[in-house]
Picture 1 (cartoon, one colour):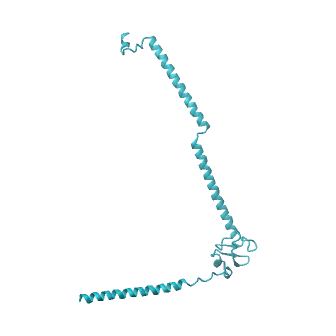
Picture 2: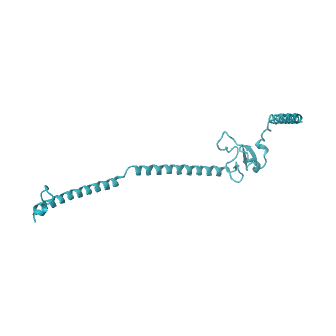
Amino acid sequence: MVLTMYSFTTERQTLAWVFFVAVLLCISFVGQGDCQTSPPPPTPCSAYKDCGKCVPHAKCLWCFTTNNCTEYPVSWLLPPASVCQLSQARWGVCWFNFEALIITLAVLGGAIIVSIIACCCCCCCCKKRRSRPDGEEEGYVRRREEIKHRAEERSVERKARHDQIRKKYGLMGDSDHPYSKFENE
């Protein structure tokens, strides 16, 4: 009984594997057939008769003067007047003319460039100012050092005068013994 059950299980597993491989082969053949079909050719820009359908395609340009959709002349940065005037040309969106788009992008680009240059100049100027003190600060430091040096000289002179006065009146004794001051009393 155990032997018949084992053979039944292996037959069942074998059938399952055969079925799985057959399904996998069918799918792979169907998938290859789909992959070999070529995509439809792109629709030419002249086929679009509405601005809303023309401008979403990056290769197309709508002209309100002639009310037609033409291919954007990629050899030119800006479309020439023979294709369409800039104020009447639309690219990307219908509500924003090409001339305003170019002006807006130029102003934004210029503002970004000017702000970058201004930031660089400010950073360079601040770095130079921090790295070396200017002339006034050097003068203050020099004067402070001179005042400190004169104060030290006066302090030494004052101490010398006081020592002379102490010797004159016997307040400063011999340095041989520490109690020389008390002997004079």
